[in-house]
Length: 383
Ligand SMILES: [Zn+2]
Image (cartoon, rainbow, N blue to C red; front, side, top):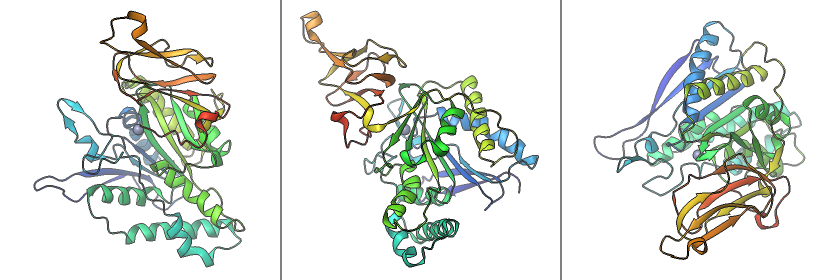
């Protein structure tokens, strides 16, 4: 079946306005493996949409040539609500105005309801269980009656993703290296090749799986949660789900878009969704590190933010990363509060110089190999 496009129409929230989501499908509906890719859940994060802009013609061409053996569902910009948030000449897009929800939280954890539905039918054969669980999850989503636009968006999008073998949710940071958030369940497993093919410079795993209800979290953790509930049953980790952080918000150009699309394409070939030769796996740029080893710098107060270190710097514990300057304090250097790295590692994400900082604002993230006492039990999602 050739490439097709459809629009999901969302319910109107105000008279005279309505929004929709464009969905592209390549390959054969129902064929395996199935990959689901989306960008811009945080609607002001467009590097992933740029990668998909370059990937789509490659997939359409592969489809024409009959090379797509599985199924690829692709949503170039998944959040029209956030895309419409133009305020005072700025595009926002991270939080819902109506309920103040971060758009990448509160996706549906279906594991409890799926467990109830399939409980006594779980058997010894993993492939049967996978089919049973996917069917139950889709039936639950089909039965949901979402009340408003955002809820409808979440349900409709999960109908596209929940039965996929691979789910890639494309985001970006402010000033950052390409990095991945994954589940420990997938490492090394299928995530190692993903990290190598995409050229990730840091890969951070939730251990054992993301507890938070991010989009990538709920899709992957469905399997981990069910395996926990039925420890004697054969329930594999049937979906590799990852959040791909495509560098910084302004890292958008055709060179990067094209390279990122080629890397995604190669991974889809490697996973045999598209036929062809993936070739030798590129060298892994960084071993995965635990979320608990990620040091996060928070602003101690308000003032002018300025950095000492560029993104990608290797840091040692105790190194000052940035400072927050009280603009009203006349004492020069004494008006500057230093924020120190509390771990050795790579400074993979930071904000821009010159921003206003406020108390508790996240200033930087460092990927370190050792779990930090001050980060134990924290999810890493705090802005
Ligand atoms: Zn994001």
